[in-house]
Image (cartoon, each protein chain N blue to C red):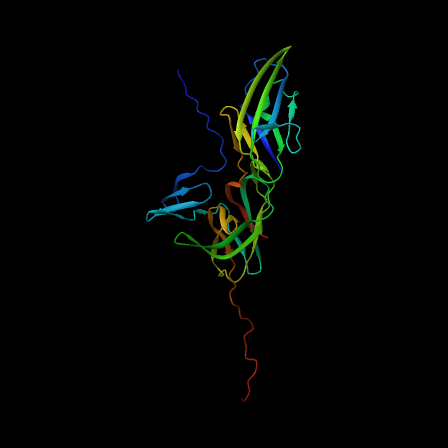
Length: 130
Length: 179
């Protein structure tokens, strides 16, 4: 029972090439659950070289049935010994088995619609006596 | 000199909208899946007729006709619930009058972009339901749960049923007797 959250339009790093940590914390009832079974805390520090965060996908294990949680995505940037903290957060209702996309440009978390079978250019190719 | 360059996106299939049916001389609407005609204030699903680009094939009762589809697909893998349906019939005032039909289960792999398929087919056994000496039209469609998902134009003059003329030979009196 999992769902995924894909990040798009994430802000560019002010310091290109610097390591960047992404902390993903799921809040339930206003309190963060870190390292709690059934919830996820992740640090990613190897994907930041080209600021290609658009490909980042987080997979959450949120337990059974439909669970209401608050997604709080934190972007923590490190530049030499200085500490720069940038936080982006958004509330969302996360349902099991549904994939989501977090659009940082609009700061909204939206469900990804299930892929629908789509036919186009439908025509007869040919006919023959079998 | 100033120039304006407009690059139109490559599109698979036709866009939804109104088109002109040259064969029937009428405006028709394409919603992305089916054709419609406007009459009496409502849009009704309709058949678009086209002359076959190929010569008709000649068949007799007992033969089997194979019709192959050409289409693009995008979406999840299809393992069940979809059918490729085809029919042989006639054009009766623009309506496809089915005489024979056949179908096959349509399975497709997951396609993240429009992918062309030209190897999906169905077969229709020829029976006496097709009158000898006549030429028939064909069309195909994709169905899901008894609903039409995609439909082709109907091609006219595709199937000619070979006429079987009654032939008598060596016709003589065999015998005669009192009854």
